[in-house]
Length: 432
Image (cartoon, rainbow, N blue to C red; front, side, top):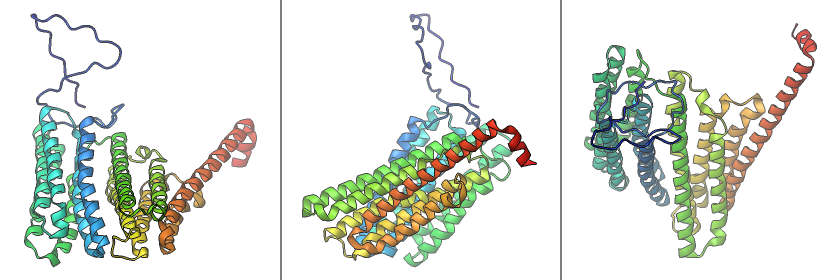
């Protein structure tokens, strides 16, 4: 565990500092410290202000990807738009995730660590600036450059870890640094290969990127903090859902201002709000940090969040598409516009169920709530202009059903526990 920095001694020429009041005493960041592992059992480990700034800047890139996805779907280039969205979102998500797990294990908050993190933030802003060119002109120079800035910065952090440690931990850090750099060379194919081969390159390089942490940590896992990691993912989920609300609000406002179509847009606005509220409720209904006990569980949980984040952001893009179709600005059918909302909503419900809910549900009825809700949301696609509102009502009903079933289970368990305390003999005889 990293020791806390020691305040500098008072200079003889200065008056002594007043005694500190109640609460923690602020400390100054040392210019340079060894980058060694923090303890997994640290108490009160929470996200830092730098991590929050990191998240906010990454959401800028997500917003740009969402805007371009809206344009592609609205112009009936759905397949191409989804492929480009998947590629750009993978770069954003993977860089964010790598930083988050590294910071959970090695954040020493010295000056050099802060500077390298700010460089990573600059990289994602460069990537965001190139998103429109990637979608419209299939030019990935700025996207590759922004991703390269983030990856080279992360590699330098791992090299600092290797410099500060020894043995299996040092070997792990060197494998991380080498794997990140090797993958970045592979991504050069986006600038060289013809358009027809970029999809296959994306698939192969994505799998290679996902294998780097598994290979690097095969002999020595990093000391990530379960509560800190679950909080980081939760905060990023909130920010992405907030961006979804913002995008949908702007779309509805523009539709009302330009077309005076309040009646047509009201079902979309209400349904979208219900979907986002339900998405928040479903994600945060259980404290997932208690489930993250091993690196195997953490890898599957962390990787699976690609679908959580991507679908949450795509819901906002889908709501924008639905608004544009309702006011006659999108060249697609009502069913296609409805699917732009219902499909990512169903994917979100299934992803959160697979990663979170199923580990805490008791009985078949509780386990089936979210999968059945996802199926019903997809069925709402055929309801035309009422599809988004119906999907929102289904999502809200899923929340209400889950709460009711959980309350009944809790009440039954309380009654059984009370009966066991009052009749210990009967309980023992039953056990025999």
